Image 1 (tube, rainbow, N blue to C red):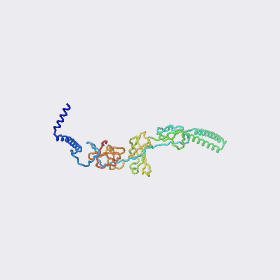
Image 2: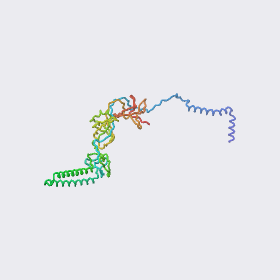
Image 3: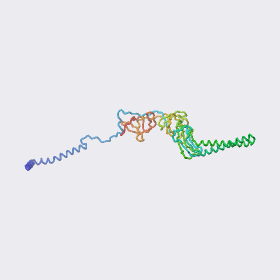
Image 4: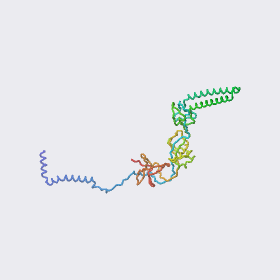
Length: 363
């Protein structure tokens, strides 16, 4: 069967004309090359409409969605407030010191302890002074006996007036010495002169207390004030008795204050005067040294304000989004004081510009 089939095919080929066989050999490569050429031309875009060469304009920012809240910048006349920083202190502050040199025996309070008037705070070693009191008492009693004897003798005209005078002088001296020693004994007990809170403890049992050395410091929490160095140009707006607003960091709240004193001395370096403002209604946890601000009304001025929600921060940079041609582009600004729900913009904006009240979230 195989030989017959091969012979039959050979016979067919033999019957095919030579030209036709040659064309068949050429047609297949030509057709394949044409198809390949069409594919290449199609891939390079020969059969597609070509966009003219040029430069596309870049559109920055984010597309503003429909219904977004916008705010147009325009100058407004606002009543300015200037904040001046200061420190809270107590109007009544007492440093308790030792009056005699003696070792500290006991300390009954620590920093932050509340105390009452007359409460014993520190005791000093009183053994030596008690001995002095006992000796002074003995001398006093002896002088008293001598004085009584001299009086009896003088009454019986057995002694002179000069002897009586000397006995009276010795008696007075002994009594003064005894009284002095008893007063010295009271110096070994240091008591609180008022109701208050201990703010500083600088002594421990066993330490040597010297005269004039501060052992404890007490302040009255019911008489707190903020001491503020105010620029001279603002002093006319803070007369004594003026009610002002005070903002404190701890507790973080606002208080009403009243100007109670202006120190009559100008600092030549900062050109300021110290103003003391009594804080009204301060809580008991208000501590000396707390940072605070005193708000002073200044002259009205023209400025740009935007809703506070329009400003956001990236790191320490303040930003808002300016709308232009339907796109929101962020811009760095510098803000100032708050005015209700708005904030003053010191730089970065021009009149007529439009900003987003609620900035879009950037990816």
